[in-house]
Image 1 (spheres, rainbow, N blue to C red):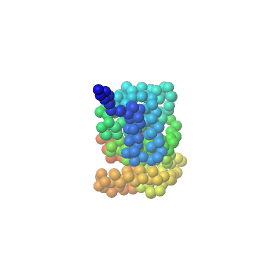
Image 2: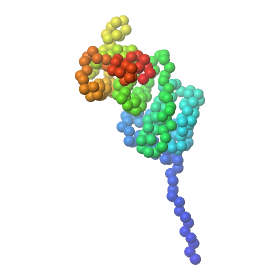
Image 3: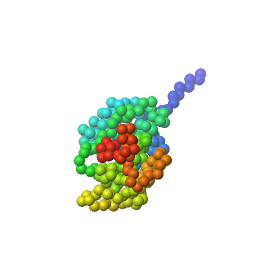
Image 4: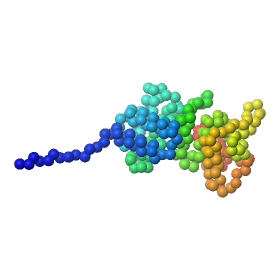
Length: 239
């Protein structure tokens, strides 16, 4: 008499392995600088270890609890909390587009802004991650990326960025007309800042099909009320 064969069941990868697999897919498909990739990997692993849930099961309440955990238990500064949430926003945007989740719990989550006060000193990899996160902003993405580079890589103040004209950039440095003590300041820019400014001005020219004069404001508002006008200090602060 033959012994009935045992029923076989498909093997499923443990949830933890699948979570990590999604992170690796995300990192492999994004065109990221090495430091930015490391930052995303670290931030997403920290969240994955903390939540211990499949990505599909995570909801808005989970994200709110994580934010409170970062702020209250780990006592992270606003910039670090913003970096963690920005990483999750980018990741969930990709998960939704790839069809791995049906809902994006990050849609209703606001990324905290640093409190006004002393300038914030960010590491290079943090600026890279911030610039990458700005890519999700649609029509203001290239403008905002150029502004962030000027603020953090070149050390300009918000009012100095607001006061820049197109002619104040010569491809190597920016000229600050309203520098302290009524002097004219010259600030060199790195390659990333140069590329960000170049891409933004090229995009502006393509959109308007009008040549930009040297006296035109470098950065303009996209708000319906002040569309095309110089982007002011408040517009940069609340960007």
